[in-house]
Length: 112
Length: 303
Ligand code: FES
Ligand SMILES: [Fe+2]
Image 1: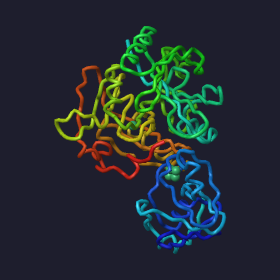
Image 2 (image 1 turned 30 degrees about the vertical axis):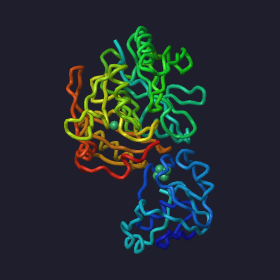
Image 3 (image 1 turned 135 degrees about the vertical axis):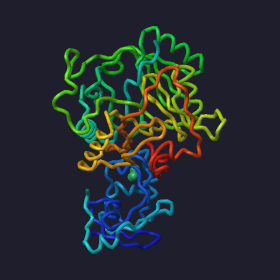
Image 4 (image 1 turned 30 degrees about the horizontal axis):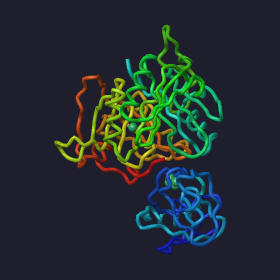
């Protein structure tokens, strides 16, 4: 298990090297604006501020090398391999959907 | 004479194996060939060799190809495309697997359009004599055929002009800025008897919005949605209805992020079909008739 710190809110959620940042968000009862969820459209680009992620397959057009080297990753394809700090832009609308349910149920990030 | 229909779309996929599992296993297309690293597929009710070509590497549309009726059409269109100011090139038999002679051009929007007259014929499982309504061994959503493709262009009006002025398409529906305007923001164009074979909305040049497969009815669309849920396919929107085309729909994504659609219903069209006009302030209703508003993906998520 790893910890994902979401900036600028400092929302802290449990992550796993087996689940993407987006899947971890979902498991914690949160949502953000997403597109294809398959590494093709680039809508879910977020900034990796600290820590390392492993990227699953994605299209170069969704995350050009230049952006990748500046620390951008795709929330739908980034698997955190250690504690990470991720910055989410305002227009990506990070929002609670069912955080209490997730907490009470003890949800863990899975890769479904 | 002229263009008969949308024949095939060639799309890029980041993971070819995952794409084949999706198009073959979940959508129910049949793999009909593999050549030059590409995979060719067709629906169970399609007679020609393929309607979808998967090419490894990246995402988006490589080209859309339309079948024409006669050899003369290729010559005529070659001249008309050139006269319209675009560069036309010949595509020779065999350059495209199982496809005969053709011509190809790149539109001002950056999309490649190919016209061809012949494709190897494989026929359908039900045959042409005393056929059953559907063949044995169907998989997943069991889509019978490709229906249409929708792309984005910085100048959708120009895109629509090419299809109407050069390829003799008709416009079934269009979106204009306000009543009385003739400026096309979006256009749904047909050569068949369906509401659209190709459509365009405003957006970056060269991008794919989605390509769609036909289903018989609303229940089949719902069942396709069940399969998406069962197999973990990301859904964009639906099941719902489009105001434009009146079709019933689900938008979803393939494993590389290209948007697909299952589409059923819609009215029939004919060459004297009048053009239906939507004003931009009613776009939400035009696209998603029931919700009456666009989601945050419709205009922005493209490959
Ligand atoms: S949602 Fe499309 S790349 Fe992540
Ligand atoms: Fe469509």
